[in-house]
Structures are given as C-alpha cells and as structure tokens.
Length: 275
Image (tube, rainbow, N blue to C red; front, side, top):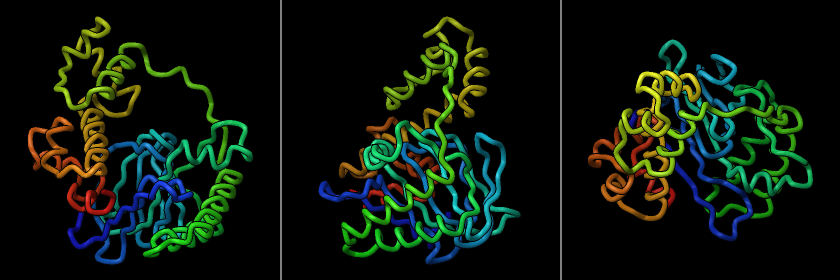
C-alpha cells in the first residue's frame, strides 16, 4: 500500500448510536494498487468504489467493481482484492457490528440477513452511503443525523439486496476442530501435526479439507486470527510491539507485514485511529 494513502479508523464512544466497528477512508491522496490476500472481517462491510476498478474473489466467484459501484462483504465472508490491470483504485468503506445492526433492525427483520452480492450497481444506495460516510467522518458527528442515515441505508440495502441465509452444514468435523483451536488461541504456536491429531486424520487430509472448506490454508487462517487479535489489543491501547507479542507474532516487523498485507495500514496508524 502506498504510504501516502489515507486510512483512518473511527471507534464510537459508548454513547454513540451508530454501530460502527471502524471505518476506512482511502482516496484523498495517491490511489492504491495494493493487492489484498484472502481474508474475512468480523463486521458487515459496505462501501463505494470512488476511482478505478477492483477485482475480487468471493463466494459467488470473481467479480469486478468500477467507480460508483457499491461494494459489500458479509461477516466472516472470505474474499480478496486486486486492482484491475494493475491500475490504482480508491474507495470508502464502513464496517458495521453485526449484532448492533441486527438490534437496530429487529423490528424490520424477523431473521438474520446477509447481502446477496459483493458488487451492486445501485446509485441510490451509493448516494445514501456517501451521505452517511461524510456525516460520520465529521469532527463532531451529529448523533441523530448519523443514526437516521445509517438506518435509511441499511433498510434500503437489505430490502433491495438482502436475503435470509441458506442453512449450511458447516465444515467437516476435523476442520471444525482445527478452526476452533486456531480461533480460540491464535497466539499459541500451531502445527499441522497438532491440528490433525485433534481428530485423528493425516496432515495431508487436514490440509486438503481445510483449504476446500474455508478457502485458505490453516497457516493463512491463523495469520488472519492473529491480525484480528492484534487489532483488539491495539484498540485497547497496547503499543504495536506489545500487540505483536500478545497476538503470537515473533516480533513487531512480522506483525506489521501481516497487518499491512491484510488491512492496508500499519499497526501504528490503526492504533492512532481507534485507541
């Protein structure tokens, strides 16, 4: 990621009504030609591509977005991101706490909903998003205005592009056990031998089954979990070196490389924005 690109996060105060995990805003400075590996987020991601074009892998296959398109991701949905033909692109993005979204819409929705497609050609949704983003990134956001803007955006987005998720059987038991181990203690070292032994399968069986069910290898998934843990530690005020140790990275440089690769921003800048 270009060091000149701007990436700011916001963490709501306890009295703020808008359920924002954090927000990303890129594009005020040089555009980005950074490629993101496969990863997932804890929250709903909603944004608008402001310049260039973007290609990503998703649960429905490869998709492309151009300037003006709405881009979305559901909680836990694996995806990646590349510039089209190597050209830089920029976007604005908000990540919303799924539990608070469900609470905000509990009278509108009778079940948990998800967004059906990662790229939407919907000018009205894009306009409502831009209005909300501008309001949220004011030095002192107006509580009533941002709450109204968020509810209008979510209601329209889910009415036009939301659906009740289909029931899924879940990953095979050996993969489920490995996922639980890596998610519950990402700071601990792990080996394929250990993960395979949890269910008595071979290392190759586990590796093949894990990649098929999750979309990434156990090592890539562990790095994602460690970055997520580091995000929480940084948001709690820990310094990058402390967060690196607490999240299981050998040192701060390893954390920085993984953090920038997955999120496009350094741990120090993330901490400054959300701590």
